[in-house]
Image (cartoon, rainbow, N blue to C red; front, side, top):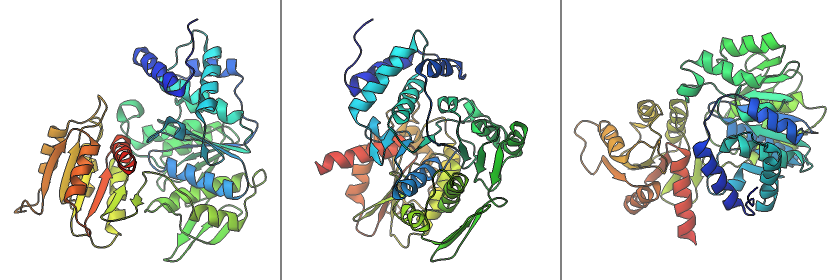
Length: 432
């Protein structure tokens, strides 16, 4: 056996090189076999979160409330913006390189000759890391779909599906009914299954019934009400009144917060959380790249919106921000996305488009993207009021927007994790 890597960058390089050769078959048999050889299990409650949009926000709210309630919390969340370590959080901080290297070595020692993709290998490693870190609760975010996602080799005590929309049609299906069935694959017999999509697909409701999961639907088993100042949550047995709005801004955050509070209600015997801890946890939650408004001027907003549902939410949030003279968009997107559907809600809000190639073979090409965006030009618009330019990467597109935008303009970075990550990295480098 050749020497194993001793550093995190070397491990990631090895897994990426292997990944290029690993054919993805969408089954869980290989992951399950390695999981069993690892004896991977959790001695604490596990909350699993799937959904097209809102997964990250729901995970972040759960983590924040539980930390404020004094529990040790493990969180697996993806993808990462700047450092791989962002994917594994123990007690509110990123896992160290040393912890990750140990976990990668452990998976490798139990893998035998079973081929694992990059995603499967790193998922098993991070779940092992969290399961051995002495946490009181584990929160696991599902990557793609649910039923066949590597995270789903674990049985969750509470499974949450946040929203069901069309995103990865090639893998998950063309309709909300097909996608709903895939996401419902994380539900378990006799365990709490929460759906915070106001229009839960029949396929999800039926699957929960077929397997005997305890299904909580928003509007039926739990709900929320809000005015300008505060909001309240009502569950099956628990009410939480006069809550502050979550620190994460945006239209869907009360749906996400309600799902998190429903999960905490289901686990109230194992993990009781007081009213003040819930209030503080929601008021202080942070999540990079989800309608993240940076300090300073011109106003800069980072949002990973990359499907029509997320894009229309972003447009709604931008509409609530007050007056800005011009809006500059830094936009890059994967070619397999519904690009027209992502652009449509933003068309009337953006004056100047800086489109970018992304560092992925799946990236939509800048010139082709520029041509699509140019079609959004309002009739008779002057060059000063509407422009489109293409750039080789998000950093160059952002630099151009910054050079042109004035104090009372705003810059919106969206379209992909890669777009936001490219701008975050550029800003980080310019601050050093």
